[in-house]
Amino acid sequence: MTGARRGPLRLAVHAVLALVAVSFFLPFLWLVVASIQPGAALSADITWEFSLKNFADVLTPETIFRPVLNSLIISGGTALITVLAAVLAAYPLSRYRSRFGRIFLYGILFSTGLPITAVMVPVYTMYSQFELTDSVPALILFMAASSLPFAIWMMKNFMDSVPVELEEAAWTDGAGWLQSLRRIILPLMVPGLTVVFVFTFVTQWGNFFVPFILLQSPDSQPAAVTIYTFFSTYGQVAYGQLAAFAILYTLPVVLLYTAMSRVFGGAFSLTGAVKG
Amino acid sequence: MTSATAPRAARIGAFVPALALLAVFFAGPLIWAAYSAFTDVALTGSAEVNFIGVDNFTTMWHDAQFWNSLWLTLVFVVGSAVIGQNTLGLLIALLLRGRNAGTRGVVSGLVIAAWTVPEVVAGFCWYSYLHRDGTLNGILGWAGLDQNWLYTTPMLAVILANVWRGTAFSMLVYQAALNDVPPELHEAAAVDGASAWQRLRSVTLPLIRRSIVSNLMLITLQTLAAFGLIYVMTKGGPGTKSSTTPIYMYQESFQFYKLGYGTAMALVLLVIGAIFSLIYVRLIKVDNL
Image (cartoon, rainbow over all chains, first blue to last red):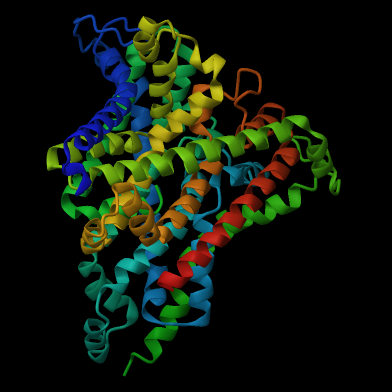
């Protein structure tokens, strides 16, 4: 701050920041360059050849559309179930202080820290025992359960900011808790609901390990898994197509993130910042 | 008044969906893990599962490759999270204070972009970046430093990739924390003749101490079980040179069909995670509950 006003220090600070910017940009270079060059290899040599052929080649039902549709179903379904269950659980946690509520909240917070990757081996054993592997609904239910702790935590914090007085008025008019939740609270916390939905959606869109373990048939796998299969199977030949596929798969997430931080400002970055 | 009856129904009923999901699909596998870690359950489909006591843990104790994986996990967590992301995130947040909107936008925009990219795509970016014919060698080739980084320094490669991917998180945490530091304190220290370094050490860092500790806990928990990034880049190789415990656990369980042994390793990871998580919960308690 004050120190940086002096010449040499200011210059040094800018030099470091420029270095940071370049270092963070360079790994992206190949992705962008390879996607628009026909016959791209692993090097990001710029040949000034420009073509959208790689994009055209991957925009087929086999390569892109079905996996992306699967991703939409899996991430969307997970986000929907998570939001519904989280809203319901957050209501008593936010409105009434109870011993059970406190223990539950501690449990929730504790669970957000547990490494999901480590749970996957026992989950797989359990699922194969009950013949639930390769089932998309069973996958969605596991993803929803693993997203719930953090979603409930966020949802409770959002709900805490809705004044309880508004609800008391509804109660005296004879409304039940479910009605006051639906008519009074939910309309007032649309931003919170959106943040939790998008956060869960984006997290599961990028989730590779869970569907990689639980789904075997290529027909039901989301883009996160098929793009890896594409890489390990055709990687030697079709790097340009891989880059185009990666860009198309990444784009929705980046757009959603940008839209959310535009609309909600720092709040969204911060909810993301509690757990990335 | 209906409000007296409404809360009771709400308290019980509203928890049911979340509790059911968590019990069946989250707590269930954990309990299952605690049981099957003591069995010889295998992926070969044989129906016979025997209770073998602590055999899996005895095997683990004598398994040099397991200890190697645990060591590599420690190197990965300390290198990429505790040192890399944490220090770089704090440094960027500090340096960006008081810069103009353009500089802030470009630098934090690029850092956050690396964070929003899905794990597998981040793996591709770094695979190509560090490959024999990749961008980095294109730059370093002029100095004769080019080499196959994924082969010669696999741990450094995955650590750098994870620093790239995760620094935004620490940066955002520290930007928020630094916003809460009153500027008057800095000015007062500057008037007293404290240098920039002294001000950082005796004014800023003590004030954001709590953020530093909880950030360290959170990024440790996120890094401990990292799988996709390492798997895409090196698959744990060459040999076992970047085979962290999650990778080794995956290979033992799904490539060598030793699910019981894999589960025992999962249990070890979970216990380590649980310890850090408990510390984190204790930290939060003071603030929020």
